Length: 563
Ligand SMILES: CC(=O)SCCNC(=O)CCNC(=O)[C@H](O)C(C)(C)COP(=O)(O)OP(=O)(O)OC[C@H]1O[C@@H](n2cnc3c(N)ncnc32)[C@H](O)[C@@H]1OP(=O)(O)O
Ligand SMILES: CC(C)C(=O)C(=O)O
Ligand SMILES: [Mg+2]
Image 1: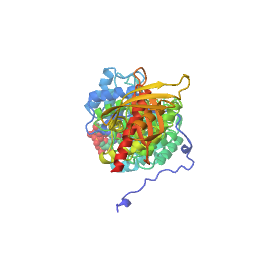
Image 2: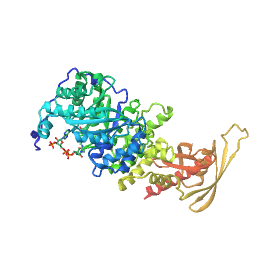
Image 3: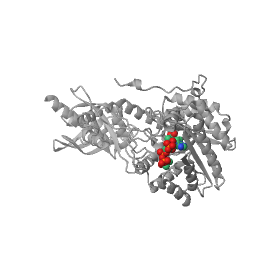
Image 4: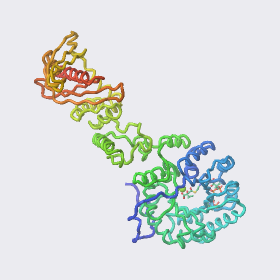
């Protein structure tokens, strides 16, 4: 047994009249990317300046208007990067740089130095307020801890007079979730009082789940509680800063927004300390899939992923929501079948409202339409195989034929594992189209023998085939071309059969278009039916080839039956 008694839950407020469970997310919050700070400080190899610039420019392109670019007093590279952004005029007018500093005098002074030349900036100060950190890290009482925050705030305020631009203050009671809520509010209010915060001079109050400590509903209760208890809620921009230690950072963010937050800090793909910061791609795209404009553009998700992997040297896991390599791939049969049907219906209904089983988002919206949605292994069924043949190669295999072909593909997957689309197509061709032994099509001539041109019930066909290597001419009559061919083959070959089903469709469009024809035939004395497929520019020839293919398959069955 593991020693669970070593742990206990942190007791926080109770909020029985909570209102957040009845709300929905209806608009995007103010987003702030902390990739270049919290994300960067968690990397094995922090980004170099060029990588930071690349990341910054991508964040701007994606639509972030507030970007925490670093901790300028921490190291020269952090400082130099911020100077580069400013000196090289890389910051668009509508983007505000945010910088982090501890509430310590020399660090705050250095932070201000780094900002010279900017016309606005968010200066983010923090100190830990939790019971645990007050005890083990600071060894200070509540008043002393509050004083760290208010002194820090006062210094920022003083330094503003030497700064040409506008400073927006952000204050984080770090390790907020492990802090008594009334005390967290007391410290935040004290900071806002020192700052002179007002409705027109709001302060960003950021509530970090520095370490995620409880279920997301508890975070939401804390956010709602705090939001209701500020001296003046109007002077606050309430911000969330969730981490993901329990794996519920996204849920915590979403519930925190329901609980009244205005702003979210996080990173692309959830990079950040330990298990990461909240993944903003997922939070934003979750909104998108509810029909809410996320105000961030993740439509080229693979490009974003490539940039992220290059500069952070981290990997986006294959199961990462929206971005993972496998998230638009179904292996299992019933899922493939449902996706196949759902996609058809979506197209039939004019590509309007997205409702496709097992796919919460249209992969095309993320520019992922060229990736295989369905991959075939031994868990796959006929729907998936049909989907690959349809979407990748344009063959609409008739429903009754799908099981027949899927069985052949499954034999391969059981022996070899995943079967690629190319292998599926080769197998289809070999099994159904290129079956040319012992009968092979050479040519056909179709004659309309009816005197009345509107009557097509009197057709004659002259068919040239190879029969066991020998050229033969077969003649057949019927009430239509297919019937005439059936007659010719039945009377001219040694194999007799009934025609059970027939369908055809154009394979490609334009002048070079070809048709695919599918026939289901039952050999005399045989219990099960066989399928043949023909492909040709002339639809009658395609059907004749399909019938000859089917004939060869029946011939093979008869030989097998005879042993
Ligand atoms: C949850 C977070 O992500 S917070 C951000 C964390 N990120 C970073 O720390 C990355 C950048 N940091 C650094 O490079 C360094 O820590 C520096 C340059 C900022 C400071 O370096 P140093 O002063 O040498 O070391 P260090 O950070 O360990 O300082 C610890 C001291 O600061 C105090 N301290 C820590 N945080 C704060 C704070 N927010 N405000 C005021 N004092 C603080 C500690 O109590 C400790 O005090 P003590 O020396 O009296 O015991
Ligand atoms: C500095 C603060 C906001 C932080 O990163 C955290 O508490 O996680
Ligand atoms: Mg953090």
